[in-house]
Amino acid sequence: MKIINTILEMQAFSSLRRKAGKKLGFVPTMGALHKGHLELVKQAVKENDVVVCSIFVNPIQFNNPDDLKKYPRTFEKDSAMLNDVGCDVIFYPSVEEMYPEPVTRVYDFGNLEKVMEGKFRPGHFNGVAVVVKKLFDIVMPQRAYFGEKDFQQLAIIKALVKMENLDVEIVPCPIVREDDGLAMSSRNVRLSPEHRKHAPRIYETLVKARNMFPVSTVAEVQKEVAKIIENEPFMQLEYFEVSDLETLEPVSENKPGKSVIGCIAVHMGDVRLIDNMIFNL
Ligand code: PAF
Image (spheres, rainbow, N blue to C red):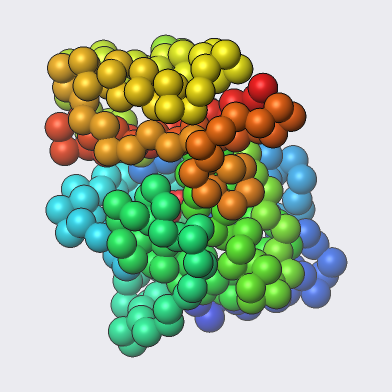
């Protein structure tokens, strides 16, 4: 497995492989890898000739400086894990390499960036879009793999690809969960043992909401979710939305035949966790 730190070397590597007719699969990450990331890489290995994974803690997508400072950085462990699952290249640039000049690009994703994560983390999706566009230009993949845990991020990236006419297939991959249901996340390691014990309640609440959905109004489901989380001693609910699968607009009525998605964000101490689940009638 190769480790590449510069944009020029990464572009030269990808150009050569593409000229040789190879299919490049790409998994962008911020490191602190867990089994969820490794599933993305394994799928990319199955579907492509060459797999590149980037590790870059992107400062411009953090609206909370403390969150950026505390973001786990575990490069040695990450690279060993990537090597084991057959990744060919880690693209591991510095902040100066990625952003030699201040970033001025401002995307307009309309409502998609104003709801849920967009509402509570201003500027976050612009930072994600800027870095993903840059990474696509550098790595030049034919396919890129993203987890459905960050469902809104996935929607933003699909919109970015359309907006910029990028020739990259976006491959969504299902949420990977711990045995107790907690969605895998790089932030889970920051939970205290007590908080970690309670954290699967988020998943259990989503399951309850999904089961209620066919026989309840959206308002009843929302009320129940708020009640469960508020009664949890270590949790503060930031939002729970029932949203349209495509536009992510909040849905107020359940219509037969239309799937929606329940999205939740919860604070446990200084750790913010998100999760989601598709609800069908
Ligand atoms: O999902 C992430 O880890 C990040 O948002 C991404 C897509 C790597 C961009 O920094």
